[in-house]
Image (cartoon, rainbow, N blue to C red; front, side, top):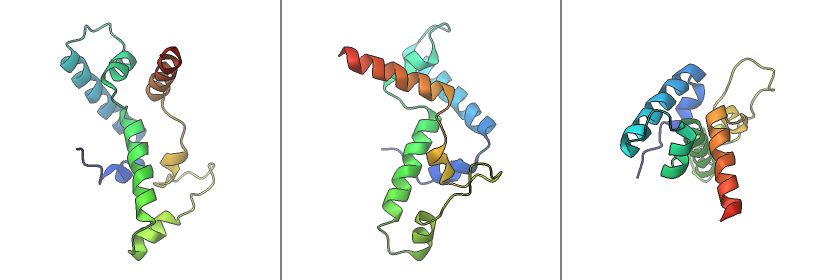
Length: 120
């Protein structure tokens, strides 16, 4: 079981920091599968059934906010009731990560999974 307690914090991380984490994850996937350098990362993620960093962070943040609403802690309740600023606002808040479109790798993996699901 993995720990997801810090995932909502990554909603504030710069995209470049998340890209670096994704690169590290891709390298570990490649090493675990002993895959050749020419095998695309999205194929590795599909075969390993492993979400990308951004998808994992988005899912963990959604789960956090879903659970937080049922807790008696007032601070958690305030986080759940938070309304994000309009998309034109320059400050990203933790709930905005739930509304952001997926990055290119995540979108490619999800579309590949959808294609495979329709052929099964």
